[in-house]
Structures are given as structure tokens and as C-alpha cells.
Length: 273
Image (cartoon, rainbow, N blue to C red; front, side):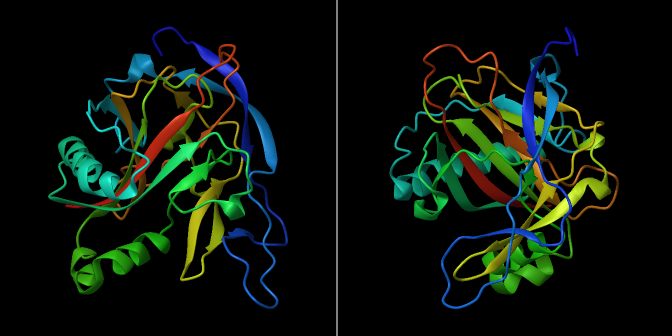
């Protein structure tokens, strides 16, 4: 850190228990597996200003990078147009900054500050998540490749595959609930806890995190709409590079009075090398 600036806030970690951590995204008929929510273990942390390291951060080391992404696209309420016009920009962004030979977008989520219950939200429109998590595990990563790539999956999985999220503000500078990212070097394998996700058509899993005082958090205050974070959420490489980036929105004590509501998009991609 050039100036050592940070904010003090609370991150919502998870803790061990007798019941698995998870969430049902639908209401099945009959008895269901008991699952408990993630993010119930609250800890005060320091989140450091990441701008002094912006030019040096690497998805293969810290697990995240930030770059310019100037785009004329504004029709984020139209999912079809997002897929048609913005997905190619996300593909180009990932290829440019990772060197992947092929990139496939498999979904996106638009986050807005909304108070309704998650059960009423769609896959694409969701409220802001406040539990520390990373999006894939060693089981769910390859399974997602098989789900998306079909008959090509087994061949593709013989080589390096990594998942990257492209996260950016929709229209305006982020003034509230910025995204915090945990330096992958400060995370240990023992910090990772599986969280089960039950959908109507499939079962998934992600990682949530146990708290460790060694975790080092960063954020990029006042991110603009022409900037984007690149987050690595899975990597099958075993050569020592980072494999998972834990992240979470958080309440920024430096939020100005009457801030603009945070609106962002997260495009999820799989990259083949």
C-alpha cells in the first residue's frame, strides 16, 4: 500500500455447524434437506484502498485485477440485448487480460439495492449479496463446464480451464455497498466451506469462508462505470497460481449522504487455455 488507507467494516463469514450451509432457490414439494444460511459469523475487518496497487494486481496472484472497460452499452434492463451486445465486450475483456484462447459467457447477474425477499427475485435480477463467498468449488467448476459445453467438455477439461467474473457498475460511480475482494494469498484451504445451492433443475455448490484474522481485504472506492473488476472464481491449474477469489459487498463507512443506489452487473465466463 502506498498510503495505507483503509476503512473498518463488518464482513459476514460462516462458521461450522451440524447442519450443512446452503439455500433453496425454489419451494419443492414434500420434505427437504435442512440447510442453514451462510454469513452468520460477523467480524470487523479492515478493507484497504486498492487503487495504489491497481496496476500490479493479478488474477493469478491476488485473484483480482481492475482495468478500464469503456462501453457505450446502456440497455442493461434488456437481457436479450445484454447477451447480444455486452457479452462480446466481456469476452474481449477476459481474453485481453488473461490470454485465453477461447472464452464462453454462461450467465450474468444484475445487482441492485433491493429489499424484497430473494425467493421473489429472478436469476438475472438479484439484490446485493453480503456473505463472503467464492462462486465455484473443485466439483462445481468442472460440472459447470459439462453443463455448458456438452460433448466438448471432457476434451476441454484435459487442459487449463479458469472461470472469471467481470464486475462493473451499470451507469454511475459506486457510492454505496462497494465490492470487497480478499487477497487469495491470505486465504488457506481450511478457510473454505462448501455451500449447497438447490435449484429446480440442478444442484450447485460454491464456497463460503470461515473467518481468519490473516485475511487481507481490498476495494476500489468510487469505481466508475467505465472500469471493471476481473475476478477469478475457479482454476484447475495446480502450479501455485490462485484458484478462488472470495468477495462480498460491504457497508462503506465513507458512504456520502443520500448516495446513488448501487447498480452493477456481474458477467460469468469460463476461459479455455
